[in-house]
View 1 (cartoon, rainbow, N blue to C red):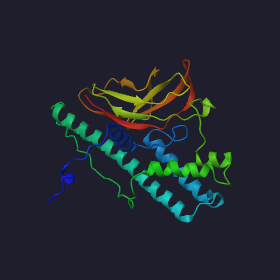
View 2 (cartoon, rainbow, N blue to C red):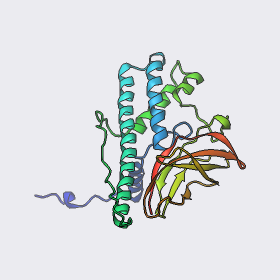
View 3 (tube, rainbow, N blue to C red):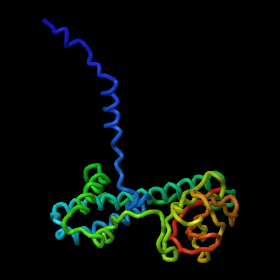
Length: 261
């Protein structure tokens, strides 16, 4: 005889349902941003340094070679993802520039070339959860018997604030993307304890840089006057931080962007 209880649907009380939602939402674990960078390029650079330094200090902190190898495997995937995504982004920008040029360019005999695509081969893949593994590892490092502030500084895990101790030697980071407006690009740059940043650009393959304005908010939309209206242009972009109206920091590394008509 069929059990009556088996045919009754399971109904959870609201409190249990709420608990399940809370547990399911805990899937975006990120390392503490007081020591871990927030943009992809800086994170990759940080992870590379951490991997090298952790391999050097791991024995004195009581970590095993298998734990060192696990960090190296995670780092290989981090480096691959950063380089592949940046490359694909540049290629997509180039593809859009080709589309605009071939469709909207002047009928003057010019033949735009579609960009060639190339993606680096991925390394051996690791399980999901690199950030969670990193956060848990850093917690273990901080309570290890051999840990001290010098080791923390070496690994890049000392908690800091947005206050910049030496503004003159600070190297800002930036992210540049094309804007929907004609011959316009967007610049994202963490302002931290500065007042803003100056944007400079160079038309590739020219050698001279041109300075635009000082921007006090990020992101900043920057427009240029085209050399040949109707033709896309590739630019190198860099920033420098300012205090008041005076530039005080080093220049950032340059980033490449294609602006379209």
